[in-house]
Amino acid sequence: MEAKEALHKFEDFLKKKTLRVTEPRKEVLVQAWKTHSHFTAEEMYDWVKDGGGKASRATVYRTLGLLVEGGFLAAIERGQGQVLYEHILGHRHHDHMICLGCSSILEFRNQEIEALQEQEAAQSGFHMVHHTLTLEGYCSSCWQKFRPELDE
Image (cartoon, rainbow, N blue to C red; front, side, top):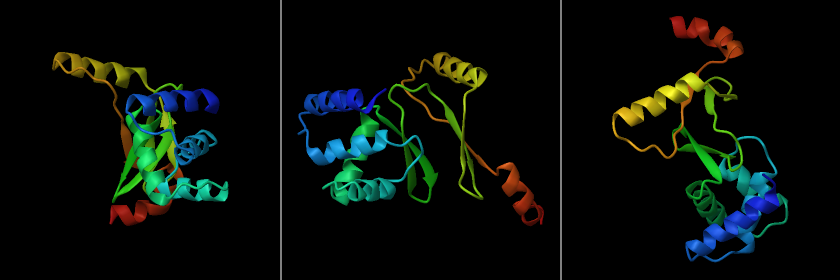
């Protein structure tokens, strides 16, 4: 999905929530659509500032929360208070493998895992709206580097 279309949908979302459509909020969305990488709130704040934007740090954090709430971004919990974001509107669902050594993120799709999650939800009478799956471990490079320490 193009940034212009995402921006229009975000404006509609804000109006439905009776929130103002402000330039700083729009700046955050536009910056999010400029990257296809995972990013932190602090990186977003830097991108907005580097782009000449006027959004305060607090506005960036609040706007990221609104973008997650509206289904524009996904938030990936990294533990110890770190959250990564990625834009998801118009993208196929995927899951993540995060390396604990180098912090690299691998995205993957597996229909069998998806089917099992849907089956479990249905059997429990649970109506799933959204889900995330994050695997944490070591990429092959880090595994070679850290394995001796982990085996001790």
